[in-house]
Picture 1 (cartoon, rainbow, N blue to C red):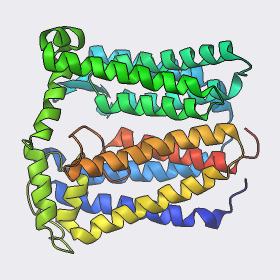
Picture 2: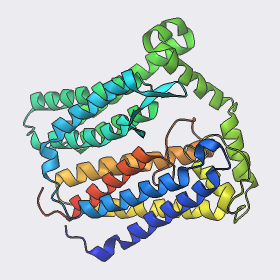
Picture 3: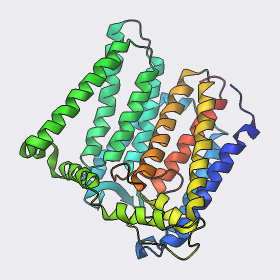
Picture 4: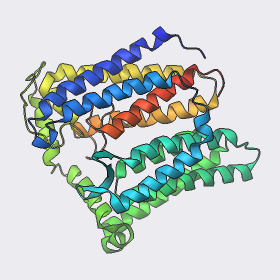
Length: 365
């Protein structure tokens, strides 16, 4: 499927509006805390690099990346191991590696490497019988399980959800017997049921199995259910108190912890009003709709698998982050793409988008 240059214009305009809104909010972020005093300049750097990445990717032949996907996956796993030993601790979690003043999040790199590797396996292996189905399913599950366990040890629940979502999208793209899907959901249901039985009745055993860190994350879910979150309270009061146009530059309506990252949606509404919230939702809708339409009409299996994997994670982050800001979902470290502050997540999102747009233009992969 050939895509004309002007057909991407509406996507790029929506993306540009999101990044501009992000920068507007970074101007006000310095009023939240001194640790955010340089986020405006840093975010500009990430966005400039992101747009350059998209431009460069459109000029390259990227089909060979699938051939080296196994090695990218191995490197990403090595980085996840290194972060457990040498990572920087933030809020009780080791998720970041620092090198000569630069910090990055290996789990974000794994998100991209895992997608490439699973797509390559899913499109290169011929499935002729149920033996082949078992082999490819087990291989994909194990490949996903390895980084999931490493990330679990950090711990980073959001990254695990991303990995599992990518796995599910690619598995559902395979033409296999429907009973495998049914069996998978039954096993997931049994596992979830067993987990909650232990949680509510045998907490000592559960703590020994999963550790105190993950157990306390479950406790935070209970706090969410009881409405006992200071972050959520501040976010909801900000949204409820915001005017149509907000307070503008160099002012903040209310203090919100983690405002430039996890609570950027509420922070933006407080800064630039309900209008900014509507603009954000409209921009995401346009990007989502555009990518869905293009992927629906794509004929190449690799393009569909890769594109839908990115799109599923992209939409998940939108729904979860905004739902979290509105008090509809538990608080978790899920950033809002192209809006939340952060270098690794921002660049990986730009890479994913650039690769998807490039793959959609490729005739053969």
